[in-house]
Amino acid sequence: MDAAELERLYGPWARRTPNDVRALFDGYTGIWWIAGGWALEAFTGVQRDHGDIDPGILREELPLLLAHLDGHLDVWAAFSGALKPIGVGAEVLPEGCGQVWTRRDGTSPWEYDIVLGPGTASEWRYRRDQRVRMPMAEALWERDGIRYLQPEIQLLYKAKGLREKDQDDFDATLPHLDEHRRGWLADALDRTLPGHPWIPRLA
Image 1 (cartoon, helix red, strand yellow):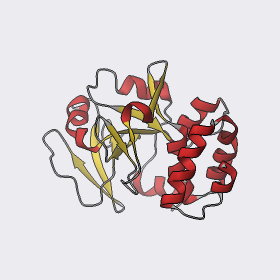
Image 2 (cartoon, rainbow, N blue to C red; image 1 turned 180 degrees about the horizontal axis):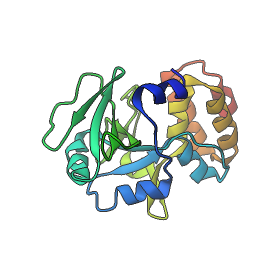
Image 3 (cartoon, helix red, strand yellow; image 1 turned 90 degrees about the vertical axis):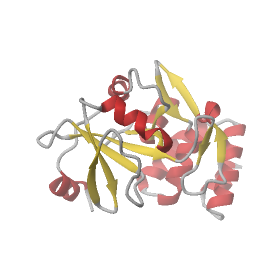
């Protein structure tokens, strides 16, 4: 579905920025970060349009998020085109649920689509192939109190879809990647998407 059809079915989304995400997680005791295009823009300084923002937390720390948002935002499990409200005390997510949506109430726009990562407090893991891992301390970087996913990891996520905007993000980010980052991404692509067209350009 395109963006217009999604909004027609599920309702509008509020426009949010990294500073809004920092405020959202103020006082949160778990690990959080921003991924997607905002993470690449923060790293490269190359500005682009953003249709949304992509906060992430550890799946195992969802109870911490529910407690943090309790009384402020309602949390919904998003899975297989369906939505189910969840709250403090929820222990089991629906099958296939990899993200949660939040909003103030049923008459308000959606605020954040929060991705649930499969790693641990000490280790980031690629949700599409958990053989690809990195110490969590290396997977995130911080600026102005905002944590971002490293650019090579974000490009790995974008590589599978290879939409026009994903290619644009790769082209804009590649000149800013040092030899270590290029090598890591090339190895991860070779393992998960052998023959990917980005691999030769990372050499």
